[in-house]
Image 1 (spheres, rainbow, N blue to C red):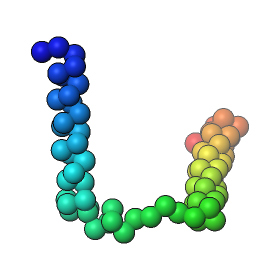
Image 2 (cartoon, rainbow, N blue to C red; image 1 turned 180 degrees about the horizontal axis):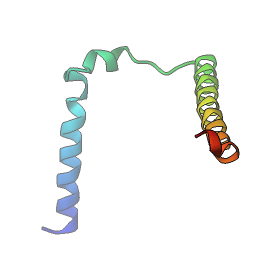
Image 3 (cartoon, one colour; image 1 turned 45 degrees about the vertical axis):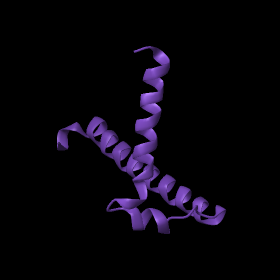
Length: 73
């Protein structure tokens, strides 16, 4: 089997899998899904960034306490 035949087989498999995407148990969710508006996207980005910063800040405070107050731990 040469490279061209192998690539056609791969393409055929990909197309068969793509046909059944909307028919599985998550088909209804995928049909209802839509692209978020710019405002929705910006809100999600802000909340995610705030969460990452908060978790990083808590981690830094714990690290700082462990280094500068080792007698209490």
